[in-house]
Length: 298
Image (cartoon, rainbow, N blue to C red):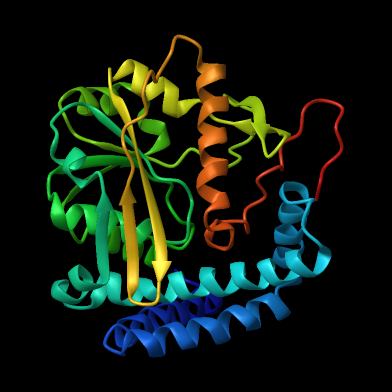
């Protein structure tokens, strides 16, 4: 039996999801304005997460002044909030609206290939828009690795949203590698987001903005096991929606050295971040896991 606190929590969750469904039909400029207000509120009120962003930016951009990093941190919260509210129309607005607002550019023809492909989708705020845009244009079976949310109602809402377009098959981390590799070899693209700190188990330490950073070598591993190429997606939040740039597949990747491959991944990711630093997911404790003997940055 649920406790009164659980009933209250579920009620708040349902109300929040209902609000997102209602927001879906507002003009985009209104949703973005609400996102700006929400971003400023989060920046001012959520001190613990603000400090995480500040540490990340100070560590990665020491050449910038304190004022420049403060302004960048504020932009990070605004873009984070705007992208979160954009899930309202991504997951609930008519498909024609989504198609009009999410535009693909670059090497789009690469998406039609049946060659085994790992799609490198870093944690930019537009990652859900990238997912939707590609699925609408190439509605083929694809796969990804999904971590369940603690709130079951939120979990169901996210799953419905991410599976709205195309045919996305979700694997849990407990499913292991074999079914993922099998699907990859069958030509089902694998969306991979390996640029977070998942702890010391299975991670290697490679440079990221000059800092020895715990990074999972899964991009190299899946590309090698699946005999697949790596195709990066770079989603950019714009005033009219999102531009999702499909970059050419990496050459000479993977190699037989997972450590070198993972360092290469982080180096390319730095280039992508430098092109739009305020749109990266700096709210995550990217440097949480430290080499033995090093103190926490946070």
